[in-house]
Image: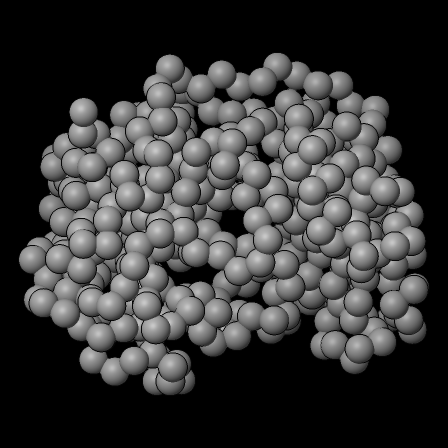
Length: 398
């Protein structure tokens, strides 16, 4: 399932309608996204990709057995996601964190939402540990925003947390987090879906989590640092969303009116995602509705992110992606995943050394009652190739 590329701080808060909403239809779309197979579906192997500057592995930071004991029993044991698997399931702008030379460790129980409209699996167990280098000021900005919620932080003024909730609020599962500048790294450590049956208080849960955070910080402090990845010599092709695709472009090509195209977010932009996107000139240009807090699609861009496309291409092809002809894109450098009408329609492109993805949502289920009537989602999805060609023309224009 193509990823929408957005992380929620509290997964328990997710519900129908968090990600996308609908709009009234406009003129008929001007193109139909019928995949045209190229002569071959081969993609050049990965030649060069970012590697973490931290000379330490995920299993050195986190003992898998201890982690499983901490989260407790779920629908399946949690397992470490490989770097290739991770890149295949995130959007280009999210991969900006990896492009910084970060070390990202994800463990999950393998569950996925049946629909991009939600709801998420319940319960779902996941652990996210991300280490970003050379970002002390940005990490402190995050801490300064959220520090009032953790005045007694165990690691001092450069950290938010560790903190845990779940037992005393009668939540179905527990949640723990740590953010801050520790051991010369911006550490983000988040655990969702903890089985709280064996904990009597949040203080007990916090004590168990602190054992894990102490271990990770100690291992990180002993680790050496490697050289930073040097991207291909390829300046950013974009300045802002207006240089990628305009509101007029999307209205014309999808037939959906009363929208605006641009970045959309809720809350302060102080997390690792925002820092990485700004540093790497990555962006998510959403197709936002004027009268609703949501969107029906987006263009995701990671300049110099061609490594991400190359890393994930074989996994996408194995899942049924189709090599598609897109004007201005080399054969094999446009892969479409739109066969499942209940899932997000995604078209990934490698344009020179850049990674771009166009996504359009499926028709929402009847339970999503807040979507305005009259939206032709199938027509919007059928315009994904014309949208891609417009994006290519925009970002390659002299």
